[in-house]
Amino acid sequence: MHIPDGFLEPKILVSTSIISLAVIFLGLKKLKNIDINRIPLMGVLASFVFVVETIAFPVIGGTSVHLEGVVLTAVLLGPFSSSLIIFCVLFLQALLFQHGGIISLGTNFFNIGIVGSFLGYYIWKIRQTKIFASFATFITTIISAVLCSFELYFSKKLVLSVGLPTMLFSHLIVGIIEAVFVYSILSFIEKISPHILKFEKI
Amino acid sequence: MKHNFIDKYSSLSSLVHKIDTKIKLISFITIAIFVSFFGLSSKILVLLLLFLIFISQLAKIPVLFLLSRIFVILPFVCLISFSYFITKQNFLDVLNVVLKSYTIILSLLILIQTTKFNDLLTTLKSFKFPKFLLLILSFIYRYFFVLTDEVEKMTFAVKLKQQKKLNLKTLTKLVGVLLLRSYNRAEKINKAMILRGADRNL
Image (cartoon, rainbow over all chains, first blue to last red; front, side, top):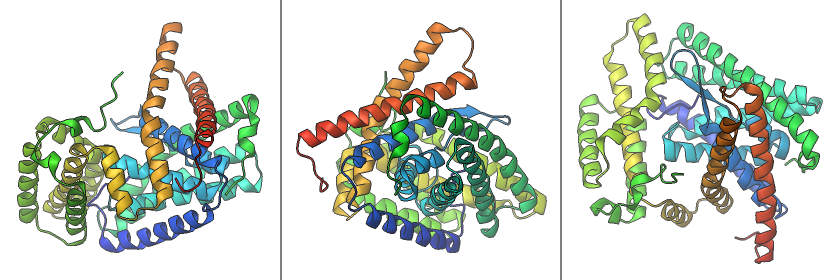
């Protein structure tokens, strides 16, 4: 869920933005001396994620969900590259489609980008198989939904007895769909061009 | 295939379009910070909103388009109004949140729809926005159109070959093909960039 502007209290906005800025700073430092061959790949993967996120599936209740592709990029490129990519994608979504706010960008990046990239990557790293990648996708989707509802709760905008079940239920569906997607995309890549999976993970 | 659905109105000419991008960007950020960090009352927000609507009309952006973007925050509004309903809190607070959110959205829309995307990127560059992120952002923006064309072609091809609606299995395969195609494109771009003398300090 991309939280729009105006819904969160300043203390939450500031605290999550500080963490997000620290991660971006570290990521930029880590990626300073990367191979130049990586830059177009990161750019095109970023636009792939951006396009995939614009394809929305309708769900019950008039709302729609879309894929995130965070764990997929984390598995292909590593946590820091993936979090920078997701930051750019979220930034553009906020800018062009108003999907999530500009001031709450730090919070959204914390929920989706950092949790998805780092937690997803390290869950996948335990045993590097497709099953673990899709499991990581499911877990991170649920955790970002929980984080989102707690942030709204601490801003006194949401009662947990209403917010948590709604968020959990809708993200349960999203998580399952996305886990299936990640599994089948990874097996597709493995079958057709496995060298993509062997990039250095930064 | 239409390509101008993102910043449709940025090529119009009006007084607002001619203002320097730096000024527009700074005033947008000021409004956004003011609205989200200082607890403004609804009266002030309505005044601000009227002022922004006046500016958007100077910029010749259709009102219907501006109104349509309120749908982005609708799920959140439903969620919090439901939880306000349960705890029997003051409903005017919901109105205040909606006004806050929409004020920021409207000011962002005025910025985006009156500025060309490239100008925005160069302005961000002059504000010391990290170069690496700008590179990825410009990649996303450029290849977004290429990839949406690809998606349209692929869905058209599927429609020609089967009468039924898309099922999950074909959809995952399509996304996989899209990923591989964009990867191949990235490799080509990379070679072309290196041939033309690209290095890390782009």
